[in-house]
Image (cartoon, rainbow, N blue to C red; front, side, top):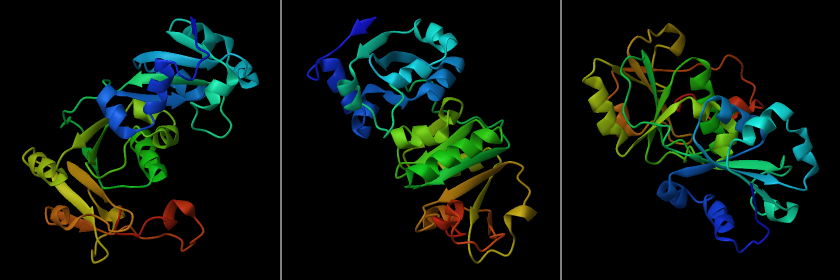
Length: 254
C-alpha cells in the first residue's frame, strides 16, 4: 500500500494525463471508475496496473468486504479526498478508480463469428458505449471501429459500456474500407443501411454479415456504402421523438 498526498506527484500527473486520448494511446492504459466496474474488471481478470482509493471518502465504506479482499491483492494507492476529486471524472464519485492495461484486446478479426459489427465514425460517447453494451449482450465478442470513431477508452464511453469493454475485442481500423474489403475475402457480406432500401432489418438473414453502423449526422460514408452487398432500412416502430435512444439517429445511420 502506498499513500500520495501531493498534487505534484508524478504518478498523480500520469493519472490526469490519461484523460487525453493521445496519452492513453502512448501508455496503452485507460481509467475505469466506480465499485461495479472495478468488480467486473477483477472478475474478468483484466490486467489492473493500480487501484486508487480515496482514504477519507464516506462512499468507500460501500465497497463490499469481499471486493476489498480482492482489491487488496492489487497495487493500491491511497489519496486524500481533495486529491481524488482532481482525478475523478464523475459528479458523485464512489472514491475508487483503477488504471487498466489496453493489451487485453487483440487486433486480429475472428472470422468464426457469424456477425461482425463495424462502426463508421460514431461520435457520441453515449451512443458508442450503448453499442458496445448491445454487442456484448447478444453474445458478440468483437467490434471494428474506424479511425474517425470516438475513442472507446474515453472515460464516458467506458462508463456507458457497464463492463462490456472487458469482454468485447475492439479492433481499430486505419482505413475501414480496406478492412471491409479484406473481410469480404472470408465470404462475409457487407450490410449497410439506407433510406432508399426496400428491405428492412427484420427481413434480413444475418449469416456471415458485417453490419456497418454510420455516423450520427451523415450515416455510412459513400466509400463504405459502395462496398455493400445489401442495403436495408431500420423502421421506427413508434414515432416518439422524446425517446433518446432514437432521437440522436436517423434511420439510415445505424
